[in-house]
Image (tube, rainbow, N blue to C red; front, side, top):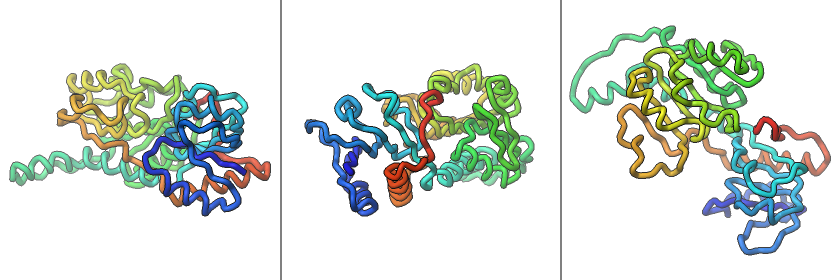
Length: 309
């Protein structure tokens, strides 16, 4: 079996070596820009080249090395018959929970303020918090969002989750569908975004929706940069309704040097590091699914084109 490794990452050798060890009977072929079609029916991809589907017309299934598949779905030449399979967790869920908890605690426990006080050499204990005054809302209740919500609920913060369809997670209040979206936002002070990027979720973090959050709100965004209308965030911050934001993803990455987010003290920036696909777990999962596919068995993580995830 030929498997095409299609990625624009700068150092694919480690991944290809691990795939060859996990699938010793397969021929792993690295994408080359000027090469002819490989005839492969299977591809493993991450940030793939734009010409992937236009050149490799024999592909029957593509295994994505991450949970987000928006980069794949927008490539030209993708056929309806080509199955897209996304990565499920592979060590990312716990990292997302860590990131969300760090940002939440930094805001709710005044740790960011204490950092400023330390620079001023000022000893000034802040008032104790009441967690009931810090209701958290998680946008997107898939594997990642559910893990984030459960971790926060374990610390006794009131947590709710919103998803497209009903999702029940112990200790987490459930909201779903467009008819419950405003109610979800209205009870939320800390909004955590873990949504996939789809036409419906593009620009969901806009002035109208952020303005429905409780006063002194805080935003933590770990989904995709295109979820956030960046100029709206500045506007809502300037109005004082939103007190701060922690952002891991941006419309343009790397973030341009002249972007106003860099120098805005109300915004904390990280360079798309909230959760990384761990190599061993990723290769183990993909290799296992490739074996299942070879045997004609049903595999999990198949992307619905209609839903975009």
